[in-house]
Image (cartoon, rainbow, N blue to C red):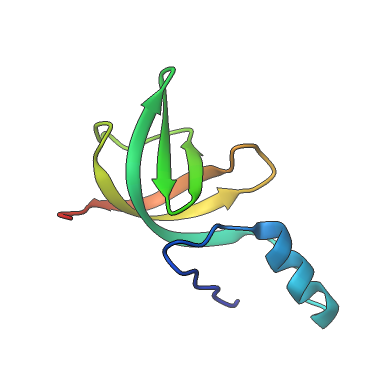
Length: 94
């Protein structure tokens, strides 16, 4: 296991991470992320806007649109937009 930490204005680029570690013989199986962002709702679906990324939340926690939350989640990067399976979240007071 290894961690990649992004600057707040950076974007999550799973292909770039996989390409960077592949020559080392490392295969990325999944991405488990910690992220902070704002919940958005569009067409009955909820998204987390975190930095430059917008993640679909297929089974969102009970939080209203506009709420700022921090999450621990697994990313399904085979979908567009990327999907977050949230393990844990907390409301942020920011």
